[in-house]
Length: 229
Image 1 (cartoon, helix red, strand yellow):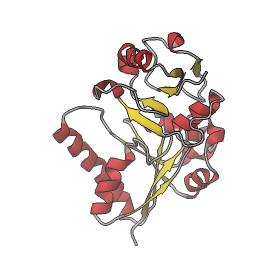
Image 2 (tube, rainbow, N blue to C red; image 1 turned 90 degrees about the vertical axis):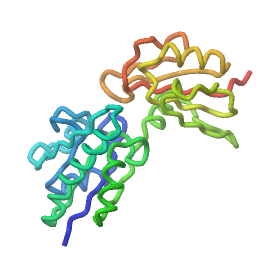
Image 3 (cartoon, rainbow, N blue to C red; image 1 turned 180 degrees about the horizontal axis):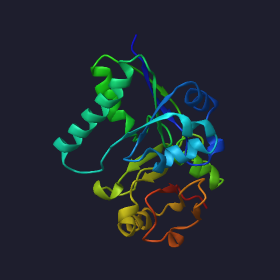
């Protein structure tokens, strides 16, 4: 019998926001995979280890997931990572791949999942609290009300589109072009707030567009809501 690969979300940063199911799967299985070159340096590992101390005694499997533009090279690395997980699954061992937030939202595990499933392995996803839900909660801000739509947009600076749709925008993966993104937001006329490093020890909250620094960190998330008088 081959093992099962679990993609497990550990939430946005606060260990108390991990689900009981995520904690149970980490405790019950010996092989824990984490994106990165050194497992114990990964943010997902540090979050989980704070509430599951026995994690330090597990067999930790770092999976290199480079953030590069060379499609051929990145596909080769994803294939290599999947084969590494398959080497454990072939021994009948389950593999728990822990990841920030939720495994269905812009998650590195997705690339491995496609390969594993194509190779005939069983994969199960375990949801975690998404960063934008956690950020909205920290801002005490309902994301959407009544029939308002929600637009979750990554790297909005690449789209060339204005933020002119009705409803609420959540902007992710835009910190490296924050000045450009702020110009888009200013033109939108929406009410803007943001959270950097949500629910982590280094968390910062910004209640207006003017407060958001141009050099905000990688884990910065912006919420832009329809303006109501």
